Length: 101
Image (cartoon, rainbow, N blue to C red):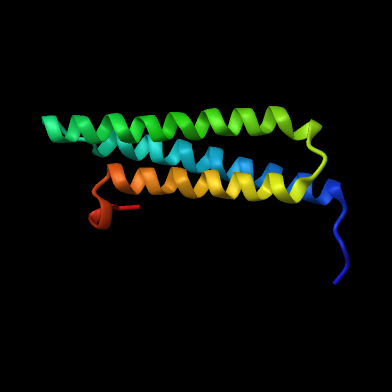
C-alpha cells in the first residue's frame, strides 16, 4: 500500500466538507418540514438549529484553513471528531434513541 500525497488528502477532505455541507442542507430542510408546534418542539428545534448552524460554521472554518494545513492526517481526525460531535448533538436534540437520525 503506497503513501498518498498531501494533495490526495486535501481532495479527500474537500469531499468530506462537501458531504458535511450537503448533509447540513438536507437536515435543515427536514427540520423546517418536520418541527412542529409546542414548547418541547421549540426547545428541541433550538438545539437542532444550533447544531446545523455549527455544522455550517465548522465547514466554513475548515475550508478556509485547509490551504495552510501542513499535516493532513491530524486535521482529518479533527474533522471526523467534529462531525461525530455534530451528529451526536443532532440525535440528542431530535429525541435520542427515537431520533430519525
